Amino acid sequence: MTDDHNGSPQPPGERRQSYEAAAARIEEIIRRLDSGEASLDETLGLLGEGKALIELCASELTAVGDALEELRLDELVSRLEQEAGG
Amino acid sequence: MPPLPVPPACAGIPDSDLAGPFPVGEYAAALRKKLRSFARVQLVGELVNLRPSRARVYFELRDPTGAIACAAWRADWEAIVARAGGAPAEGMQVVVAGGCDYYPGSATSSPGFSFAVIDLRIAGEGDLLARIDRLRKQLDAEGLLESQKRLARPLLPRTIGVITGEGGKARDDVLAALARRGWAGRLVWGFAPVQDRHAAPAIVRALGDLAAVAEVDVVIVARGGGSLADLLCFCDETLCRTVALLGVPVIASVGHHTDRTLLDDVAAVSCSTPTHAAEAAVGVDCRRARSEQAAAAARLRDHGRRAVLSRAQVLARLSRAPAAHLDRQRARLHQQLREIRAGSRRRVESERSLSARRAVVLRRKAESALLDCRERRPRELQRLALGLAGHDPQRTLERGYVLVQSAGGDPIVTAAAARRSREQLRLRFADGVLPARLDER
Image (cartoon, rainbow over all chains, first blue to last red; front, side, top):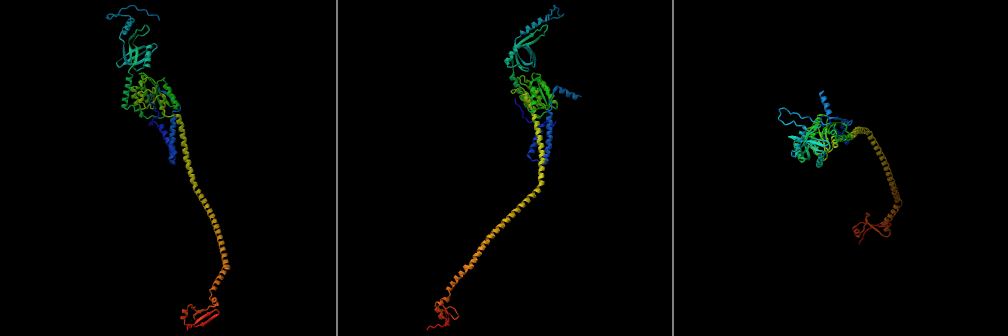
């Protein structure tokens, strides 16, 4: 049996921008800024984009960092059925 | 409890041709005797509904056309387990040896038929593996082994579904691994049996329910190790096809390192333990990711500050540039002026020194010339005068010589010249001139 810990997941897309895409873009932005080749306009644009992406990543990490919520599937299904019915 | 009184003999059913009525206990005993007289045989079928009890182990033997209840004494069962190297389990194809038996029951216990098993052999494990392999090839041919692997798998899922046995250790392992990752999102437990013939349908149901919940990003199916028979439900064709067609990625962690079920082949990721499955589900260490994000935010702030500051410094430098340029030029001019002055001084000194040297030379020359005028030249003049006086004809005349001249005063040096001159000659003496005429007679 083999493990696969280094798969390269794709962005899940529709529901929200993925954490991995945002994290990768932040690294790209920092590399560009580190190069010192960006103009002032580009730098300001990249800073704005990077700030928004960091906020996104922070919100994703916050969503899985506050408190573990454990649900039983049967309870969740019942709840969803009630919500759908009501 | 006191024994029930034996009922008195009673009449049978009127107009019935059948013998009796007989006391049921006698009939039951006779039935047992009759069944036990049947030849002992071997039966083959799938072992299901295994129910161990204190004294005996009960199960059923089934095949597609029928079933029969079986029972083995505990001692016989333990010997079978020892010989097989493990307990026969639900779903296994087994061969049993024994014969028909009947428990006649009693006033307080129910009767029952069973095939009394005295030996058992796990049969067809090779056949089972071959069947699983055929199914694997079939799923592969249909492309079902790859469909899960093509699904997008989020690095940081918010909601994870976990299908496992409710009381199993896998649950604790998953929780511990997620805690180590610093992950505390939403966990939906789909508890289901994970071994026996009820397991696969229950797992299929749980998978369907979890996949129907839009928030579920990934599903883990976890179970600890076991025999091939224990893990047989994870080779179920319906289960595998269901997983292959799910839109949510499934991470399988079934059995130990050496076990390989069809679910492992079909799933998006196959892990050796529930711990690894949880780590695969959450691809980032959330604590480290938080600190990395904080560091990235700090770097961005630093870049922003530096971007503005460096350009402000450039602007300030540029604004100071003209003044600095003037200062530089002024300093340069001053330097050039100093150099010119110093050069001029050096030149004047040099010229002065040269002039002084020339003056000395001129003075020496003048002195030398003066000396010439005063001393050397008179001496020379005198010497010349003396020399000249030595050549004076007067001196020669004074020594007694006579100079013959023509009448015009030109000297006549030769006799031929004197003969040719028919004129009067002049004889010049030291003290005067006398006229003369040549007479050659």
